[in-house]
Length: 512
Image (cartoon, rainbow, N blue to C red; front, side):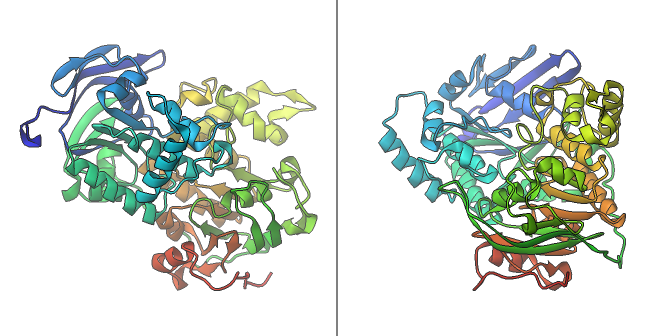
């Protein structure tokens, strides 16, 4: 039977899922054809991930029907979904940190594996798809981008008929995205259907054949992405016009707030990246961006800047004071605020409530007094953060793990911004958040810099860096290039630097 004459690969009819505080999905109808790349669009908390978990057997719907290749089915578990031919790449990684890449992938394969043969297959498949992996490397030593590769390769090894991808390119480089798209198009041509969730609307327009839009747990429309603009797709998602950026022109930068002075750091990870003679100055009222391919020293640099791994005191200066030997609390006392790239586990404790997660970094900002927790102030702070940053949550008492990925990110970013930073180091600020929230976060960073805050943004989103930064540097193989004014460089030049095309480690040229 040809693809044209085949029944729909997946049909959802009247799918509804209720939780105690929210209706995640309400009467959802969805049709995916064989060989179709179908986008699912919506704001954070619109119900996209819940719907996909229903298809993958992680969550059971309250009502509604699922048809697979024309036959009614009840998908009770991920194992059953995989048996049917459904694979899923989750937005939140489902990996065991203490196991190797190969062991994690073996756990997702339902047949017993010869580990040596599986490792060879992982190396071959990951290299062929442009997502290289070391099969014997422990997952807890991987960067976020490398963990994303494990999720994608693990799914591709299952040769699915339907591939669900939830924000698969969040931390991939442009080159890796191109390679992934080639793979997805080849899979679609061979009859594999793809359900694609992403907030990167340019990707949706380039890759997908059809888009279904969710808002508030309901289907609000469908569109052909190839004939829509990014602006029109965004407005379909959020139901209103996108805000424009408001950036103060001709800003005067102030004194140095964050100075990285010849920072070298040998990594304790045999697969990690050592830092070599990092030099950078971030002034008051300035936003500097650091671009780079994941795994080139960003994680090591973030540990060194946050105080999680202190070093030599003069390596890091905060407001002129030697801070390289201080721990994270000591640097917070000097006005540093920090947003890590890992939301759950490092930015927030999954099992703890939002209000207690606020206490983790805000205890010295009036949320505790003389060692006693000020619960009323914590709740007030959390409510204000939820409201100001439009976090979709049941309330301050909701566990962090109960929120969608984008809403966790908005809460963590909001928490740190509300703690009155003088220096802000933020990694992947809009990773996985919807287009409206991304615009809000970027505008908030611009507003912060306008008030004199020194902001250092580490991101793999080049468009984001060019939109908000005054200067951009590139980290590659543990070395940092000179930070160049945005007007004096281009995405193409930054892309070449990300690929390591420079002759020697650069040093920061701007006077301190």
